[in-house]
Length: 287
Image 1 (cartoon, rainbow, N blue to C red):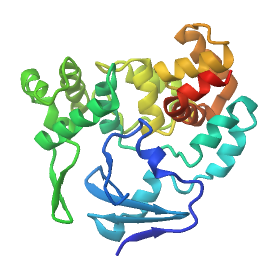
Image 2 (image 1 turned 90 degrees about the vertical axis):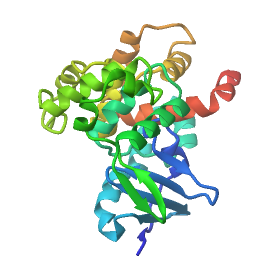
Image 3 (image 1 turned 90 degrees about the horizontal axis):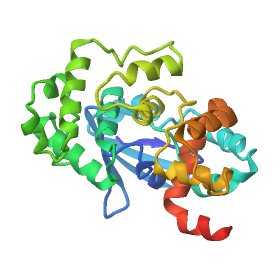
């Protein structure tokens, strides 16, 4: 039986699936989205405020997928809070329905190591290559999908072999991080009850993880909603809105965002990122 979620608003899975936070969702010709989350395949169809979900695990996955999609959170209230910043009203209006997914920390860590200096289509392709080569197969509607491989699966791979997945120089970082996590030296599944700053310090000890990647990991898999990842799009939009298009250091931008937006900084970041990436030409011609 499909899982049917009624009265979910605001919700826009086109924005969610293509917003740069998760890389394993693909739109099908019929408008449905298919994606692999942990060890299950999900198919999501959105019609108005009704979301219909089919899963390789059946309706027993309902609690899991609702948590993953952040269904219990009141995004009406979040959007209301962000709109108190008048300069952000256009971003919220465009990005309304965006939600922050609750993803697996290990998969998120590797995905964002791969994302460094990379484009979304390349990231998606590399992750899919890694999953097909090292992940466990999952049968869904007669088609084989692949789960994201475990740390142990990647810890013993040679760098030359992993490079065949088109991950390039990041192969070394992926393998070294897999070894650290599989050994338990850094337990990314046990970061509860520590501050965002302490969590960030632990994450940046992993090879290939800098400030921006650490903030992505915290925001997308650890529910640290005060994390504020800054990439080139975020730098552009912040400089445009708040600094009259003057170039500003990343350190200053980070401090500005944390102080201005506080505990909802991560939500602000997502709405702004989505807005900037999709509407940049319109934004810069408005002034």
